[in-house]
Length: 598
Image (cartoon, rainbow, N blue to C red; front, side):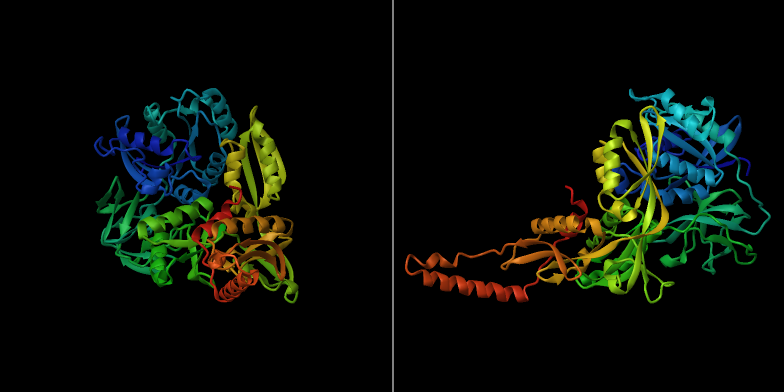
Protein backbone atom coordinates (compact mmCIF):
# COMPACT_ATOMS: atom_id res chain seq x y z
CA UNK A 1 0.00 0.00 0.00
CA UNK A 2 2.85 2.41 0.71
CA UNK A 3 3.81 2.30 -2.98
CA UNK A 4 0.36 3.41 -4.26
CA UNK A 5 -0.51 7.04 -5.04
CA UNK A 6 -4.02 8.14 -6.05
CA UNK A 7 -4.30 11.64 -7.49
CA UNK A 8 -6.46 13.70 -9.85
CA UNK A 9 -5.85 16.72 -12.08
CA UNK A 10 -8.00 19.82 -11.48
CA UNK A 11 -8.00 23.11 -13.39
CA UNK A 12 -10.14 25.69 -15.15
CA UNK A 13 -11.37 24.80 -18.66
CA UNK A 14 -8.61 24.94 -21.31
CA UNK A 15 -5.64 25.22 -18.92
CA UNK A 16 -3.98 22.13 -20.42
CA UNK A 17 -5.01 19.23 -18.13
CA UNK A 18 -5.48 16.60 -20.84
CA UNK A 19 -2.27 17.55 -22.67
CA UNK A 20 -0.27 17.30 -19.44
CA UNK A 21 -1.93 13.94 -18.71
CA UNK A 22 -0.71 12.77 -22.16
CA UNK A 23 2.88 13.66 -21.20
CA UNK A 24 2.58 11.81 -17.86
CA UNK A 25 1.36 8.70 -19.73
CA UNK A 26 4.30 8.91 -22.12
CA UNK A 27 6.87 9.53 -19.38
CA UNK A 28 5.75 6.44 -17.45
CA UNK A 29 5.55 4.29 -20.59
CA UNK A 30 1.83 3.60 -20.04
CA UNK A 31 1.06 4.38 -23.68
CA UNK A 32 3.25 3.44 -26.65
CA UNK A 33 4.32 6.01 -29.26
CA UNK A 34 2.19 4.16 -31.82
CA UNK A 35 -0.99 4.53 -29.73
CA UNK A 36 -0.24 8.13 -28.78
CA UNK A 37 -2.65 10.83 -29.91
CA UNK A 38 -3.67 14.20 -28.51
CA UNK A 39 -6.11 14.02 -25.55
CA UNK A 40 -5.31 10.29 -25.26
CA UNK A 41 -7.71 9.80 -22.34
CA UNK A 42 -10.66 11.55 -24.00
CA UNK A 43 -12.37 8.69 -25.81
CA UNK A 44 -15.55 10.49 -26.88
CA UNK A 45 -15.73 12.00 -30.36
CA UNK A 46 -17.42 15.09 -28.90
CA UNK A 47 -14.54 15.68 -26.46
CA UNK A 48 -11.98 15.72 -29.26
CA UNK A 49 -14.13 17.91 -31.49
CA UNK A 50 -14.69 20.59 -28.87
CA UNK A 51 -11.33 20.18 -27.15
CA UNK A 52 -12.98 19.80 -23.72
CA UNK A 53 -13.14 16.95 -21.21
CA UNK A 54 -16.72 15.89 -20.46
CA UNK A 55 -16.12 12.73 -18.39
CA UNK A 56 -13.46 11.94 -15.80
CA UNK A 57 -10.99 9.30 -17.00
CA UNK A 58 -9.07 7.01 -14.66
CA UNK A 59 -5.82 5.26 -15.62
CA UNK A 60 -3.05 3.38 -13.79
CA UNK A 61 0.64 4.17 -14.40
CA UNK A 62 3.80 2.40 -13.18
CA UNK A 63 6.72 4.60 -12.14
CA UNK A 64 10.19 3.90 -10.74
CA UNK A 65 11.52 6.40 -8.21
CA UNK A 66 14.83 6.01 -6.33
CA UNK A 67 14.90 2.26 -6.98
CA UNK A 68 11.31 1.60 -5.82
CA UNK A 69 8.36 0.75 -8.09
CA UNK A 70 5.26 2.86 -7.54
CA UNK A 71 1.69 2.52 -8.83
CA UNK A 72 0.15 5.89 -9.72
CA UNK A 73 -3.62 6.06 -10.27
CA UNK A 74 -4.46 9.23 -12.19
CA UNK A 75 -7.93 10.68 -12.79
CA UNK A 76 -8.20 13.42 -15.43
CA UNK A 77 -11.25 15.62 -14.67
CA UNK A 78 -13.33 18.14 -16.68
CA UNK A 79 -12.80 21.88 -16.17
CA UNK A 80 -16.16 23.39 -17.10
CA UNK A 81 -18.50 24.48 -14.28
CA UNK A 82 -21.30 22.27 -15.69
CA UNK A 83 -19.25 19.12 -15.07
CA UNK A 84 -18.09 19.93 -11.54
CA UNK A 85 -20.08 16.87 -10.35
CA UNK A 86 -17.58 14.65 -12.19
CA UNK A 87 -14.79 16.50 -10.36
CA UNK A 88 -16.38 16.00 -6.92
CA UNK A 89 -16.63 12.23 -7.55
CA UNK A 90 -13.01 11.96 -8.70
CA UNK A 91 -11.79 13.91 -5.67
CA UNK A 92 -13.58 11.47 -3.33
CA UNK A 93 -11.41 8.64 -4.72
CA UNK A 94 -8.03 10.41 -4.30
CA UNK A 95 -5.50 11.59 -1.69
CA UNK A 96 -3.82 14.27 -3.80
CA UNK A 97 -4.53 16.72 -6.61
CA UNK A 98 -2.44 18.48 -9.25
CA UNK A 99 -3.72 22.06 -9.40
CA UNK A 100 -2.88 23.30 -12.89
CA UNK A 101 -2.83 27.02 -13.69
CA UNK A 102 -2.23 28.46 -17.15
CA UNK A 103 0.86 30.73 -16.93
CA UNK A 104 -0.59 33.09 -19.54
CA UNK A 105 -4.12 33.40 -18.09
CA UNK A 106 -3.63 33.11 -14.34
CA UNK A 107 -6.16 31.87 -11.79
CA UNK A 108 -9.75 31.66 -13.05
CA UNK A 109 -13.08 31.11 -11.28
CA UNK A 110 -13.23 27.34 -11.81
CA UNK A 111 -9.65 26.94 -10.51
CA UNK A 112 -10.80 28.38 -7.18
CA UNK A 113 -14.00 26.33 -6.89
CA UNK A 114 -12.25 23.05 -7.79
CA UNK A 115 -9.50 23.87 -5.30
CA UNK A 116 -12.08 24.37 -2.51
CA UNK A 117 -13.65 21.00 -3.42
CA UNK A 118 -10.23 19.36 -3.03
CA UNK A 119 -9.48 21.12 0.27
CA UNK A 120 -12.83 19.99 1.73
CA UNK A 121 -11.65 16.39 1.20
CA UNK A 122 -8.20 17.18 2.76
CA UNK A 123 -6.33 16.47 -0.46
CA UNK A 124 -2.62 17.24 -0.77
CA UNK A 125 -2.34 19.99 -3.41
CA UNK A 126 0.60 20.16 -5.86
CA UNK A 127 0.57 23.55 -7.67
CA UNK A 128 1.72 23.47 -11.32
CA UNK A 129 2.32 26.40 -13.64
CA UNK A 130 1.48 25.07 -17.11
CA UNK A 131 2.06 26.42 -20.65
CA UNK A 132 5.47 27.88 -19.76
CA UNK A 133 6.49 27.66 -23.44
CA UNK A 134 3.97 30.36 -24.49
CA UNK A 135 5.40 33.79 -25.32
CA UNK A 136 2.60 35.37 -23.22
CA UNK A 137 3.49 33.40 -20.05
CA UNK A 138 3.74 35.50 -16.85
CA UNK A 139 5.40 33.10 -14.35
CA UNK A 140 6.16 35.67 -11.58
CA UNK A 141 2.72 37.26 -11.64
CA UNK A 142 0.80 33.96 -11.70
CA UNK A 143 3.10 32.40 -9.06
CA UNK A 144 2.15 35.31 -6.75
CA UNK A 145 -1.54 34.51 -7.33
CA UNK A 146 -1.00 30.80 -6.52
CA UNK A 147 0.98 31.57 -3.34
CA UNK A 148 -1.75 33.96 -2.21
CA UNK A 149 -4.51 31.44 -2.99
CA UNK A 150 -3.14 28.26 -1.37
CA UNK A 151 -0.42 29.63 0.91
CA UNK A 152 2.41 27.46 -0.43
CA UNK A 153 6.09 28.38 -0.94
CA UNK A 154 7.41 29.65 -4.29
CA UNK A 155 9.76 26.63 -4.49
CA UNK A 156 6.81 24.23 -4.36
CA UNK A 157 5.32 25.52 -7.63
CA UNK A 158 6.42 23.29 -10.52
CA UNK A 159 6.91 24.99 -13.87
CA UNK A 160 5.72 22.74 -16.69
CA UNK A 161 4.57 22.61 -20.28
CA UNK A 162 2.22 19.96 -21.63
CA UNK A 163 3.39 20.72 -25.16
CA UNK A 164 7.17 20.39 -24.72
CA UNK A 165 7.16 17.97 -21.75
CA UNK A 166 8.99 20.44 -19.45
CA UNK A 167 8.69 19.57 -15.73
CA UNK A 168 6.98 16.17 -16.21
CA UNK A 169 9.65 14.29 -14.22
CA UNK A 170 9.37 16.88 -11.41
CA UNK A 171 5.60 16.36 -11.28
CA UNK A 172 5.95 12.56 -10.99
CA UNK A 173 8.58 12.93 -8.27
CA UNK A 174 6.37 15.42 -6.39
CA UNK A 175 3.41 12.99 -6.55
CA UNK A 176 5.51 10.21 -5.02
CA UNK A 177 7.08 12.45 -2.36
CA UNK A 178 4.16 14.62 -1.25
CA UNK A 179 0.89 12.74 -1.92
CA UNK A 180 0.17 10.47 1.08
CA UNK A 181 -0.21 6.72 0.52
CA UNK A 182 -3.79 5.39 0.93
CA UNK A 183 -4.92 4.56 4.46
CA UNK A 184 -6.99 1.48 5.25
CA UNK A 185 -7.07 -1.98 6.80
CA UNK A 186 -6.62 -5.02 4.56
CA UNK A 187 -7.92 -7.34 7.32
CA UNK A 188 -11.22 -5.42 7.72
CA UNK A 189 -14.43 -6.38 5.83
CA UNK A 190 -14.40 -5.24 2.20
CA UNK A 191 -15.41 -1.61 1.60
CA UNK A 192 -15.03 -0.12 -1.90
CA UNK A 193 -16.63 3.04 -3.27
CA UNK A 194 -18.06 3.23 -6.82
CA UNK A 195 -17.03 6.57 -8.32
CA UNK A 196 -18.07 6.02 -11.94
CA UNK A 197 -19.76 3.55 -14.28
CA UNK A 198 -19.90 2.96 -18.03
CA UNK A 199 -22.12 0.79 -20.19
CA UNK A 200 -20.72 -1.84 -22.53
CA UNK A 201 -23.33 -3.37 -24.89
CA UNK A 202 -21.64 -6.81 -24.71
CA UNK A 203 -20.59 -7.05 -21.06
CA UNK A 204 -23.18 -4.92 -19.28
CA UNK A 205 -22.30 -2.29 -16.72
CA UNK A 206 -18.64 -1.75 -15.80
CA UNK A 207 -18.34 -0.02 -12.41
CA UNK A 208 -15.14 1.81 -11.43
CA UNK A 209 -14.31 1.69 -7.72
CA UNK A 210 -11.67 2.49 -5.14
CA UNK A 211 -10.95 -0.07 -2.38
CA UNK A 212 -10.95 1.69 1.03
CA UNK A 213 -10.67 -1.42 3.27
CA UNK A 214 -10.28 -5.17 2.72
CA UNK A 215 -9.54 -7.19 -0.43
CA UNK A 216 -11.73 -8.06 -3.42
CA UNK A 217 -11.06 -11.29 -5.38
CA UNK A 218 -12.22 -12.56 -8.74
CA UNK A 219 -15.30 -14.82 -8.50
CA UNK A 220 -16.13 -13.57 -5.00
CA UNK A 221 -19.79 -13.01 -4.03
CA UNK A 222 -20.25 -9.27 -3.49
CA UNK A 223 -23.07 -6.98 -2.35
CA UNK A 224 -23.97 -3.41 -3.31
CA UNK A 225 -24.69 -1.78 0.03
CA UNK A 226 -27.46 0.73 -0.85
CA UNK A 227 -29.39 -1.35 -3.37
CA UNK A 228 -28.79 -4.49 -1.21
CA UNK A 229 -28.28 -6.81 -4.17
CA UNK A 230 -25.74 -9.63 -4.51
CA UNK A 231 -23.62 -10.41 -7.57
CA UNK A 232 -20.60 -12.45 -8.60
CA UNK A 233 -17.38 -10.55 -9.35
CA UNK A 234 -16.99 -12.15 -12.82
CA UNK A 235 -14.00 -9.99 -13.67
CA UNK A 236 -11.99 -7.44 -11.71
CA UNK A 237 -8.91 -5.55 -12.77
CA UNK A 238 -7.13 -2.23 -13.13
CA UNK A 239 -7.58 0.53 -15.69
CA UNK A 240 -4.72 0.84 -18.16
CA UNK A 241 -5.38 2.17 -21.68
CA UNK A 242 -7.78 -0.78 -21.82
CA UNK A 243 -9.13 -3.04 -19.06
CA UNK A 244 -6.38 -5.15 -17.44
CA UNK A 245 -7.85 -8.16 -15.52
CA UNK A 246 -6.34 -9.16 -12.13
CA UNK A 247 -6.95 -11.96 -9.60
CA UNK A 248 -7.42 -9.57 -6.65
CA UNK A 249 -7.39 -5.88 -5.71
CA UNK A 250 -6.22 -4.75 -2.29
CA UNK A 251 -6.77 -1.69 -0.09
CA UNK A 252 -5.86 1.54 -1.89
CA UNK A 253 -6.27 0.12 -5.40
CA UNK A 254 -8.46 1.70 -8.06
CA UNK A 255 -10.07 -0.74 -10.48
CA UNK A 256 -13.16 -1.95 -12.30
CA UNK A 257 -15.67 -4.75 -11.78
CA UNK A 258 -17.87 -6.56 -14.31
CA UNK A 259 -20.69 -8.64 -12.85
CA UNK A 260 -23.10 -8.97 -15.77
CA UNK A 261 -25.50 -6.25 -14.61
CA UNK A 262 -27.75 -5.08 -17.45
CA UNK A 263 -30.19 -2.77 -15.61
CA UNK A 264 -29.16 0.86 -15.31
CA UNK A 265 -30.86 1.46 -11.94
CA UNK A 266 -28.93 -1.35 -10.18
CA UNK A 267 -25.64 0.56 -10.08
CA UNK A 268 -25.61 3.82 -8.15
CA UNK A 269 -22.52 5.99 -8.30
CA UNK A 270 -21.43 6.61 -4.69
CA UNK A 271 -22.62 3.17 -3.55
CA UNK A 272 -20.37 0.88 -1.47
CA UNK A 273 -19.29 -2.59 -2.60
CA UNK A 274 -18.91 -5.11 0.23
CA UNK A 275 -18.67 -8.89 0.54
CA UNK A 276 -21.87 -10.99 0.88
CA UNK A 277 -20.35 -13.37 3.48
CA UNK A 278 -18.81 -10.70 5.68
CA UNK A 279 -20.50 -7.35 4.93
CA UNK A 280 -19.25 -4.06 6.39
CA UNK A 281 -21.44 -2.23 8.92
CA UNK A 282 -21.56 1.24 7.35
CA UNK A 283 -21.40 2.52 3.80
CA UNK A 284 -18.74 5.02 2.73
CA UNK A 285 -19.71 8.67 2.74
CA UNK A 286 -18.32 9.96 -0.53
CA UNK A 287 -19.89 12.89 -2.33
CA UNK A 288 -23.21 14.69 -2.24
CA UNK A 289 -26.19 13.92 -4.46
CA UNK A 290 -26.36 15.83 -7.71
CA UNK A 291 -28.47 19.00 -7.72
CA UNK A 292 -29.81 19.78 -11.20
CA UNK A 293 -29.91 23.50 -11.96
CA UNK A 294 -31.64 23.76 -15.30
CA UNK A 295 -34.76 21.85 -16.33
CA UNK A 296 -36.01 21.27 -19.86
CA UNK A 297 -38.34 18.86 -21.60
CA UNK A 298 -36.88 16.41 -24.12
CA UNK A 299 -39.42 14.93 -26.55
CA UNK A 300 -39.04 12.53 -29.48
CA UNK A 301 -39.87 14.12 -32.85
CA UNK A 302 -42.01 11.06 -33.61
CA UNK A 303 -44.14 10.00 -30.63
CA UNK A 304 -43.66 6.30 -31.57
CA UNK A 305 -39.98 6.65 -30.53
CA UNK A 306 -40.89 7.34 -26.88
CA UNK A 307 -39.82 3.91 -25.55
CA UNK A 308 -36.60 4.03 -27.54
CA UNK A 309 -35.85 7.47 -26.10
CA UNK A 310 -36.39 6.12 -22.55
CA UNK A 311 -33.94 3.27 -23.27
CA UNK A 312 -31.37 5.73 -24.68
CA UNK A 313 -31.69 8.07 -21.67
CA UNK A 314 -31.15 5.18 -19.22
CA UNK A 315 -27.98 4.14 -21.06
CA UNK A 316 -26.78 7.74 -21.12
CA UNK A 317 -27.45 8.11 -17.39
CA UNK A 318 -24.90 5.35 -16.73
CA UNK A 319 -22.19 7.34 -18.48
CA UNK A 320 -23.36 10.60 -16.94
CA UNK A 321 -24.94 10.14 -13.52
CA UNK A 322 -25.66 13.87 -13.19
CA UNK A 323 -28.50 13.53 -15.72
CA UNK A 324 -31.88 13.33 -13.95
CA UNK A 325 -35.12 12.64 -15.81
CA UNK A 326 -38.77 11.70 -15.28
CA UNK A 327 -41.66 11.14 -17.73
CA UNK A 328 -44.03 14.01 -18.58
CA UNK A 329 -46.50 14.87 -21.31
CA UNK A 330 -47.28 18.08 -23.17
CA UNK A 331 -50.34 19.07 -25.17
CA UNK A 332 -48.20 20.30 -28.06
CA UNK A 333 -45.44 17.68 -28.08
CA UNK A 334 -46.98 14.46 -26.73
CA UNK A 335 -45.03 12.16 -24.38
CA UNK A 336 -41.46 12.93 -23.37
CA UNK A 337 -39.17 13.47 -20.38
CA UNK A 338 -38.53 16.31 -17.99
CA UNK A 339 -34.74 16.40 -17.55
CA UNK A 340 -32.52 18.11 -15.00
CA UNK A 341 -29.13 19.37 -16.15
CA UNK A 342 -26.23 21.02 -14.35
CA UNK A 343 -26.13 23.90 -16.86
CA UNK A 344 -26.63 24.95 -20.46
CA UNK A 345 -23.47 23.30 -21.83
CA UNK A 346 -24.46 20.06 -20.10
CA UNK A 347 -27.88 20.25 -21.79
CA UNK A 348 -26.29 20.87 -25.21
CA UNK A 349 -23.88 17.93 -24.75
CA UNK A 350 -26.70 15.54 -23.72
CA UNK A 351 -28.72 16.53 -26.79
CA UNK A 352 -25.70 15.96 -29.06
CA UNK A 353 -24.90 12.60 -27.46
CA UNK A 354 -28.51 11.40 -27.92
CA UNK A 355 -28.26 12.25 -31.60
CA UNK A 356 -24.79 10.76 -32.17
CA UNK A 357 -24.68 7.72 -29.93
CA UNK A 358 -28.32 6.65 -30.15
CA UNK A 359 -29.56 8.26 -33.42
CA UNK A 360 -32.39 9.98 -31.53
CA UNK A 361 -33.59 13.29 -32.97
CA UNK A 362 -35.24 15.18 -30.12
CA UNK A 363 -37.07 18.44 -29.47
CA UNK A 364 -35.87 20.39 -26.43
CA UNK A 365 -38.22 22.89 -24.78
CA UNK A 366 -37.26 26.24 -23.28
CA UNK A 367 -35.11 25.55 -20.17
CA UNK A 368 -36.28 26.81 -16.79
CA UNK A 369 -35.60 26.25 -13.09
CA UNK A 370 -37.78 24.83 -10.31
CA UNK A 371 -39.83 27.19 -8.13
CA UNK A 372 -41.61 26.85 -4.78
CA UNK A 373 -45.17 28.11 -4.47
CA UNK A 374 -47.15 28.59 -1.24
CA UNK A 375 -50.97 28.60 -1.21
CA UNK A 376 -53.11 30.89 0.98
CA UNK A 377 -55.25 28.01 2.28
CA UNK A 378 -52.31 25.81 3.27
CA UNK A 379 -49.39 28.18 4.01
CA UNK A 380 -47.21 25.36 5.43
CA UNK A 381 -47.45 23.21 2.30
CA UNK A 382 -44.80 23.75 -0.39
CA UNK A 383 -45.63 22.99 -3.99
CA UNK A 384 -42.59 22.43 -6.25
CA UNK A 385 -43.22 23.88 -9.71
CA UNK A 386 -40.89 22.46 -12.37
CA UNK A 387 -42.93 23.50 -15.36
CA UNK A 388 -44.83 26.78 -15.91
CA UNK A 389 -47.93 24.74 -16.87
CA UNK A 390 -47.97 23.27 -13.30
CA UNK A 391 -48.31 26.71 -11.68
CA UNK A 392 -51.51 26.86 -9.58
CA UNK A 393 -54.11 29.59 -10.01
CA UNK A 394 -52.49 32.93 -8.97
CA UNK A 395 -55.62 34.06 -7.08
CA UNK A 396 -55.17 31.27 -4.50
CA UNK A 397 -51.40 31.67 -4.24
CA UNK A 398 -49.75 33.42 -1.31
CA UNK A 399 -46.21 33.77 -2.73
CA UNK A 400 -43.76 32.14 -5.08
CA UNK A 401 -40.04 31.66 -4.41
CA UNK A 402 -37.25 31.21 -6.95
CA UNK A 403 -33.73 29.79 -6.52
CA UNK A 404 -30.88 32.26 -6.07
CA UNK A 405 -27.17 31.69 -6.68
CA UNK A 406 -23.94 33.31 -5.65
CA UNK A 407 -22.03 34.09 -8.84
CA UNK A 408 -18.30 34.82 -8.96
CA UNK A 409 -16.87 36.51 -12.03
CA UNK A 410 -13.11 36.97 -12.42
CA UNK A 411 -12.16 39.45 -15.13
CA UNK A 412 -9.80 42.22 -16.19
CA UNK A 413 -10.43 45.68 -14.71
CA UNK A 414 -11.40 47.28 -18.04
CA UNK A 415 -14.51 45.07 -18.37
CA UNK A 416 -15.89 45.63 -14.85
CA UNK A 417 -18.42 48.30 -15.94
CA UNK A 418 -19.90 46.23 -18.75
CA UNK A 419 -20.16 43.12 -16.55
CA UNK A 420 -21.84 45.03 -13.72
CA UNK A 421 -24.38 46.47 -16.18
CA UNK A 422 -25.13 42.96 -17.47
CA UNK A 423 -25.54 41.52 -13.95
CA UNK A 424 -27.81 44.37 -12.79
CA UNK A 425 -29.91 43.94 -15.95
CA UNK A 426 -30.27 40.27 -14.90
CA UNK A 427 -31.60 41.35 -11.44
CA UNK A 428 -28.24 40.72 -9.77
CA UNK A 429 -27.08 42.46 -6.57
CA UNK A 430 -23.42 43.28 -6.11
CA UNK A 431 -22.07 41.63 -2.94
CA UNK A 432 -18.32 42.10 -3.12
CA UNK A 433 -15.48 43.27 -5.32
CA UNK A 434 -11.90 42.14 -4.66
CA UNK A 435 -8.78 43.04 -6.62
CA UNK A 436 -6.74 39.83 -6.93
CA UNK A 437 -3.90 41.67 -8.69
CA UNK A 438 -3.61 45.14 -10.25
CA UNK A 439 -5.65 44.26 -13.31
CA UNK A 440 -7.74 41.25 -12.18
CA UNK A 441 -10.96 41.65 -10.21
CA UNK A 442 -13.23 39.11 -8.57
CA UNK A 443 -16.84 40.37 -8.51
CA UNK A 444 -19.42 38.50 -6.44
CA UNK A 445 -23.14 38.84 -7.20
CA UNK A 446 -26.30 37.34 -5.82
CA UNK A 447 -28.78 36.74 -8.61
CA UNK A 448 -31.73 34.54 -9.62
CA UNK A 449 -30.74 31.30 -11.32
CA UNK A 450 -33.51 31.74 -13.91
CA UNK A 451 -31.73 34.81 -15.33
CA UNK A 452 -28.58 32.80 -16.01
CA UNK A 453 -30.34 29.97 -17.79
CA UNK A 454 -31.04 31.90 -20.97
CA UNK A 455 -28.15 33.76 -22.53
CA UNK A 456 -26.10 35.02 -19.59
CA UNK A 457 -22.95 33.01 -20.28
CA UNK A 458 -22.78 33.94 -23.97
CA UNK A 459 -23.34 37.61 -23.22
CA UNK A 460 -20.74 37.59 -20.43
CA UNK A 461 -18.18 36.22 -22.90
CA UNK A 462 -19.04 38.85 -25.51
CA UNK A 463 -18.99 41.91 -23.19
CA UNK A 464 -15.64 40.78 -21.74
CA UNK A 465 -14.20 39.64 -25.11
CA UNK A 466 -13.74 36.18 -23.61
CA UNK A 467 -11.69 37.39 -20.63
CA UNK A 468 -14.25 36.69 -17.89
CA UNK A 469 -14.50 33.36 -16.09
CA UNK A 470 -17.68 32.46 -14.29
CA UNK A 471 -18.57 30.10 -11.44
CA UNK A 472 -21.70 29.78 -9.29
CA UNK A 473 -23.26 27.81 -6.47
CA UNK A 474 -26.83 27.81 -5.08
CA UNK A 475 -27.67 29.86 -1.97
CA UNK A 476 -31.36 29.02 -1.46
CA UNK A 477 -34.81 30.35 -2.36
CA UNK A 478 -36.21 33.90 -2.13
CA UNK A 479 -39.71 35.29 -2.72
CA UNK A 480 -40.11 37.11 -6.07
CA UNK A 481 -42.82 38.85 -8.07
CA UNK A 482 -43.17 36.19 -10.77
CA UNK A 483 -45.93 35.76 -13.30
CA UNK A 484 -46.68 33.14 -15.93
CA UNK A 485 -46.43 34.32 -19.51
CA UNK A 486 -48.21 32.22 -22.12
CA UNK A 487 -47.65 32.23 -25.86
CA UNK A 488 -50.63 31.83 -28.13
CA UNK A 489 -50.42 30.83 -31.79
CA UNK A 490 -53.66 31.31 -33.70
CA UNK A 491 -55.43 31.60 -30.34
CA UNK A 492 -54.08 28.25 -29.05
CA UNK A 493 -51.64 28.10 -26.17
CA UNK A 494 -48.23 26.48 -26.83
CA UNK A 495 -47.31 25.07 -23.40
CA UNK A 496 -43.73 24.30 -24.45
CA UNK A 497 -43.08 28.04 -24.88
CA UNK A 498 -44.70 29.22 -21.62
CA UNK A 499 -42.33 30.79 -19.11
CA UNK A 500 -42.34 32.13 -15.56
CA UNK A 501 -40.89 35.64 -15.71
CA UNK A 502 -40.41 38.58 -13.39
CA UNK A 503 -43.20 41.14 -13.76
CA UNK A 504 -40.77 43.89 -14.73
CA UNK A 505 -39.37 41.84 -17.65
CA UNK A 506 -42.65 40.46 -18.99
CA UNK A 507 -43.53 43.15 -21.58
CA UNK A 508 -40.04 43.34 -23.04
CA UNK A 509 -39.57 39.57 -23.15
CA UNK A 510 -43.06 38.99 -24.61
CA UNK A 511 -42.42 41.47 -27.43
CA UNK A 512 -39.04 39.95 -28.27
CA UNK A 513 -40.32 36.36 -28.31
CA UNK A 514 -43.24 37.33 -30.57
CA UNK A 515 -40.87 39.05 -33.02
CA UNK A 516 -38.57 36.03 -33.04
CA UNK A 517 -41.42 33.59 -33.65
CA UNK A 518 -42.73 35.79 -36.46
CA UNK A 519 -39.37 35.34 -38.23
CA UNK A 520 -39.17 31.59 -37.65
CA UNK A 521 -42.67 30.20 -38.15
CA UNK A 522 -43.33 29.59 -41.86
CA UNK A 523 -46.24 31.45 -43.46
CA UNK A 524 -49.44 29.49 -43.94
CA UNK A 525 -52.48 29.90 -46.21
CA UNK A 526 -54.12 31.88 -43.39
CA UNK A 527 -53.10 34.75 -41.12
CA UNK A 528 -51.53 33.67 -37.79
CA UNK A 529 -51.60 35.99 -34.76
CA UNK A 530 -48.65 35.39 -32.37
CA UNK A 531 -49.55 36.68 -28.90
CA UNK A 532 -47.88 36.84 -25.50
CA UNK A 533 -50.41 36.91 -22.68
CA UNK A 534 -50.50 37.13 -18.90
CA UNK A 535 -53.73 35.43 -17.84
CA UNK A 536 -56.40 36.89 -20.15
CA UNK A 537 -54.45 40.08 -20.89
CA UNK A 538 -52.49 40.13 -24.17
CA UNK A 539 -49.27 42.10 -23.68
CA UNK A 540 -47.66 41.73 -27.12
CA UNK A 541 -48.79 40.71 -30.59
CA UNK A 542 -47.27 40.13 -34.00
CA UNK A 543 -49.07 38.86 -37.10
CA UNK A 544 -47.69 36.38 -39.62
CA UNK A 545 -49.28 37.40 -42.91
CA UNK A 546 -51.09 34.80 -45.02
CA UNK A 547 -49.78 33.51 -48.32
CA UNK A 548 -52.25 34.89 -50.85
CA UNK A 549 -53.06 33.85 -54.35
CA UNK A 550 -53.94 36.71 -56.72
CA UNK A 551 -57.61 35.78 -57.27
CA UNK A 552 -58.37 38.97 -59.22
CA UNK A 553 -55.86 38.13 -61.97
CA UNK A 554 -58.62 36.81 -64.29
CA UNK A 555 -60.64 40.06 -64.14
CA UNK A 556 -59.45 42.26 -66.97
CA UNK A 557 -61.12 45.63 -66.32
CA UNK A 558 -64.85 45.51 -65.70
CA UNK A 559 -66.77 46.51 -62.63
CA UNK A 560 -65.09 46.75 -59.18
CA UNK A 561 -67.90 44.63 -57.70
CA UNK A 562 -66.63 41.58 -59.63
CA UNK A 563 -63.19 41.95 -58.01
CA UNK A 564 -64.75 42.64 -54.62
CA UNK A 565 -66.87 39.46 -54.90
CA UNK A 566 -63.75 37.32 -55.59
CA UNK A 567 -61.82 38.95 -52.72
CA UNK A 568 -64.72 38.42 -50.28
CA UNK A 569 -64.90 34.76 -51.33
CA UNK A 570 -61.14 34.39 -50.66
CA UNK A 571 -61.51 36.13 -47.28
CA UNK A 572 -64.27 33.73 -46.23
CA UNK A 573 -62.09 30.77 -47.25
CA UNK A 574 -59.13 32.12 -45.23
CA UNK A 575 -61.40 32.59 -42.19
CA UNK A 576 -62.64 29.00 -42.45
CA UNK A 577 -59.05 27.75 -42.84
CA UNK A 578 -57.96 29.66 -39.79
CA UNK A 579 -60.59 27.93 -37.68
CA UNK A 580 -59.41 24.45 -38.63
CA UNK A 581 -55.75 25.23 -39.41
CA UNK A 582 -52.97 23.79 -37.23
CA UNK A 583 -49.70 25.71 -36.85
CA UNK A 584 -46.54 23.59 -36.79
CA UNK A 585 -43.81 25.11 -34.63
CA UNK A 586 -40.36 24.26 -36.03
CA UNK A 587 -37.63 22.97 -33.67
CA UNK A 588 -35.51 26.11 -34.33
CA UNK A 589 -38.26 28.23 -32.79
CA UNK A 590 -37.93 26.45 -29.41
CA UNK A 591 -34.16 26.95 -29.42
CA UNK A 592 -34.15 30.49 -30.82
CA UNK A 593 -36.06 31.73 -27.79
CA UNK A 594 -32.83 31.06 -25.87
CA UNK A 595 -30.81 33.33 -28.14
CA UNK A 596 -33.06 36.37 -28.23
CA UNK A 597 -30.14 38.80 -28.34
CA UNK A 598 -28.60 37.44 -31.52
